[in-house]
Length: 361
Image (tube, rainbow, N blue to C red; front, side, top):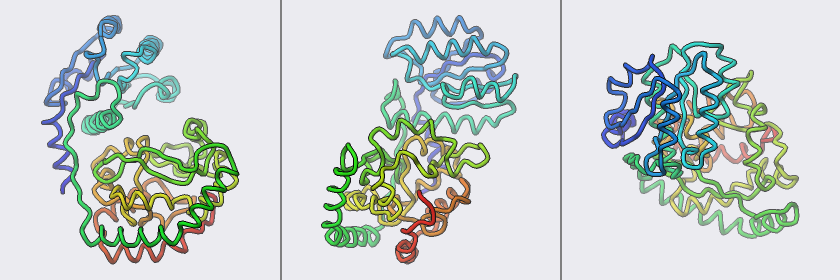
């Protein structure tokens, strides 16, 4: 299976609507930016505003490409108007900045747009970013993304690996069933909320499924994530990161801290394994907000390997604050390229001492 070939083939399946405001990127849009795209171009903000105001639910563009320069206030007003309109609020927005202060633009627009590209930028990178934004809009059924038909990346777990998963997961569930019942009772006594935490995750081939854990955080903890981005252990020195892991996460409950540091919160994922969503060993299935950041061919390779409860990065770097974003991605790619039954067995053996963290995670 070749992700590069799959990405190239996508352009034959995409039917997308793009609205573009500006002049400097017009030539690139005219020269095969997408094969099957309906690109409407505007040189004046008022013309785009009129176009947007006349859109109905069935005729809303999937994506806006907006050039931003000296008219920062006008563009921000336009974006605010779009996001406050129930019909257009699901439209994805990418800014193309050709002039002006980079930090000022980031501060003004980052909360309202999907991405910002600063000139000079790589057109191929922008094209791939657009494809992945549309892919995840399709997964989430946001906006008018039903018009995007992206061919699935097919992957089947090898028979020996699948048989091993079923046998081991079943035995472990039987052994830990009394402990799981006790954990469920303690969670109900410790804090208000459900016993299980369920979230949408992207696994092998971008398959999205319901991912289960014992709840270790306060209810609605996901809504507090933006406020805690500065504590992300992967984003060092104020940088950004595709992966998110909060140091000393204040959302974690008293019992949750113990469950997370002993990895007992992961036990319900054995049901995901029995269901075929995951394997015992593989790359960690990612929340959609993380998965859509991995847009380049190099990093998207991780999705061509099996998704799993434990994996290569857990037994080598997990719990160490010095682990970088790139190290985590490279370990995922290494596993996708080289996994085998014996490699899985070694990872499972090494997982036991890795369960007990040196740091709170």
